[in-house]
Image (cartoon, rainbow, N blue to C red; front, side):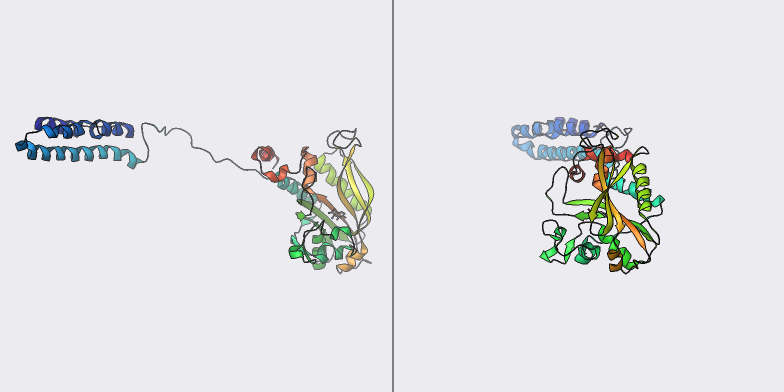
Length: 339
Ligand code: DAH
């Protein structure tokens, strides 16, 4: 028995392992329940009583050295932090995926760029507004339906504090704080109490434009918007203005562009009219100028407002506004190249 123990000690002293898996196999071979060391412990019961003391000590010594040795073999791989048997250090690392801008940001930046070339600067205003900046200063009569709970989200049911329903409120803030000439656009998020569908959402984005100076005319408005339409949708784009009504502009108009899908010959997208509406506009009503302490005898100006979602839908021929808010990367990734 003592000889067997001696032999095993020598054998174990000479052990080597090339990987953590090798070391684990050695542990199983020597130390598991049916391992070579354990088997000797089983045989211990057959040792004659007078030898038990010496054999017992030798067995314990064997077991301890076997445990130590095999643990050391294992440690060398754990300390290195990798298993040389499995890890291919020449493999390239995993790269972090590169994000892209949201299509609405892409288009907002394009709009800002186009008007920037015409000298328009950018201003912003608060999303939580008061009645004055969203409605009253903009010449909305007290009974105007837009003030209704059905269109407007009020904060704590307070009729004076609300989420802005359009970015026209920023016109008022800018005019209150600055004398003409004013030439700026106001991008931002707006809120309306509307049922969500493929065409409408209760949160969306607008860009408002404002130009106030001496002798600003409707012709200036027309040329500015024509330039915008051609830059945004292509040089072949045509525009038309239809008379309309907004409380804060007089005269008011809605602007259509020739259909971005069929070019004007008629298709499903333009409902076979050849035209699609993209914005509202007009000459700033003198009442609005006076409300904002700008002399309406001296100054005139134009304003316009457009929905960024609508422009983006038309530009990229997307048919459901909800896609902008779902954050499905399969949709968003398609705009990576449109930075
Ligand atoms: N505020 C209008 C809306 O949300 C859009 C608009 C129309 C803005 C005409 C204007 C304008 O500045 O002149 O529907």
